[in-house]
Length: 429
Image (cartoon, rainbow, N blue to C red; front, side, top):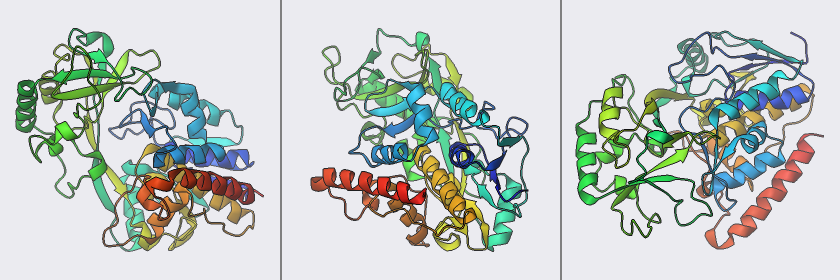
């Protein structure tokens, strides 16, 4: 391979973001993606950047840490944010997308570069030359084994889950209604209200439902993405204060719903909707039976059922250098969820950061850390400096920014955006 050639393993958000940056810098990028030749049990399309668990990229507001991270990425020329802008669907204060259009947009933008070489094959051995590992939560067993041998310790992992999708025209709108929580400026969500009796019956049946087999070697769940049935097992009222909370969804026809299941638009056409917060490990027949107990979904046509998959990540505080390269193999950079971040936007951000760091090294430039005043810098700091004993995947949140307080949130936002603009300008010199 030539000096201006870099391999990227994985065509998800992190890999796509990294590839886009390096392609624009004139590098020849060898992008390895095993799909569609090798299935992984979660993805269903051959496109780069396919979203699996949800079509939501979370909050679009700057007073939300993930919303601010999105704005930081826009200032860094993010491919993810450009694709999201072209494929957005109504969802209140959240940024949600038509997932097929989103992935097709990313794929088309990448394949438009003549210096992109796509390899449709699975990589089981660690590359010997400069590369970015962006294989995500579904990293293959061969590559995980190679990483374990290199790092001298086991990888951490937890199980993640995705939610079902239903056809809009199969929803009973004599019971369901449109409204966004607390009047967010649109009526983007479909709401299915429960009476107290309906809610209690739903929870009872959910707890009795048959679950799919989870491998015995690791059944730890990530607190930020718990299966619905796991939350329900924590107490009868848990779901009412979680994904089924009714607050802010009152209407004249439904003045006091006891609980509410929400569905979010999944396509630009608005013909498919996903059940918000309904990640699950129930068997498919049980999902059909139990979720049909939701008022308005009695005759719903399920286009996709929820599923569980393993989410693997490295013990980053122990194994990563400040530039996201491996201490044991500095030519290998870790990006996306494999690094220990959780969330679509966070994964994309780490892909862009890893690509920038590798590009600067290839160009003979000194390493430049992302400022701690930014959400991206604070998230990176967590990966590198958090307690090794309690390390687990992390979303963008205000607690990561030590200088942030609710009373001075506007100052934090302004400081962050100024810092990322200054950083991005210097980093690309």
